[in-house]
Length: 158
Length: 180
Image 1 (tube, one colour):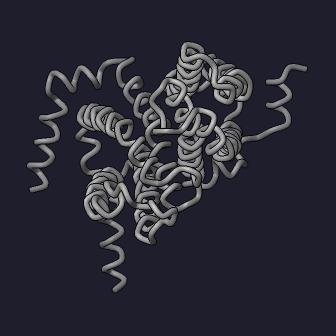
Image 2: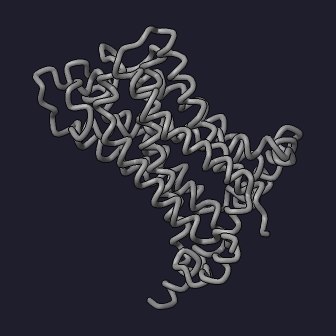
Image 3: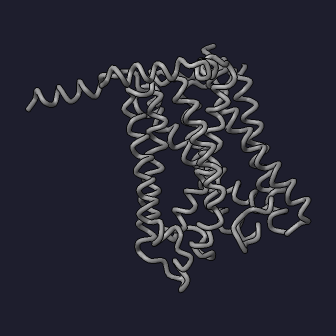
């Protein structure tokens, strides 16, 4: 059985509080925005440091150590709020190519953040490697955010 | 008074430039996405600066160093944000100016300006803020109020999009007056 049919048969979004409580959807969007500022913002601080323009007198490794818990907390909250938003109308998201691309970019961002990005920041690689890593990280996360916004302009009803 | 604001708003959004912005299929969402990206990158830095002032993050780096290092980035972010805001609001000013969340957002932005002035010398441009390793109470006050202000501004920004009755607040006030 396909995922869509299973979803239609087993889940009715019209009873979801995200759709019945007037302010809940907007409030969840605010949580989503605030927590991506926390997660992407802290990652961006490490990126700036890798690019050579971070906190004065502090290495990328020190900035990573100082922000990693906040990044982790931000990622957990932003994904939870994202799941709540997704649950308001799963098929609209499921059928949107923009949303699917966003999910791949998000996965790439998380994997990159906890593998290459982390290793380069902690090991003090050569400036060239550090710069490329910082730039790639910024590009991935900006892509995720752009896809999130463009989703609402590209996904109509289905 | 109200009519003149209405006609002024209409004149601004009807200018060739803002009409082009409004009618462009790609430009408007691109500006919105840039606005969001700035919230993530530069808003994240504001968050971390506030958390540092509250002594919750970056404890191994003096608050004055964190503030000083983030200053250039926050300025760049501020300029891009204002640019985005002018484009977004200017192209739909008819709809924006009577929106109470838009008005509240602008008022709160003015309040953050005042906040910056109040703590200008004592916190934000104070190189010896925590030289002895201890943060003064006023640093936590500055960080805490900044955090609340920016979260409120973000929330107002989101709520602008969900508001569609320009007379809701007037009706609420009239209803309350009738009760009294």
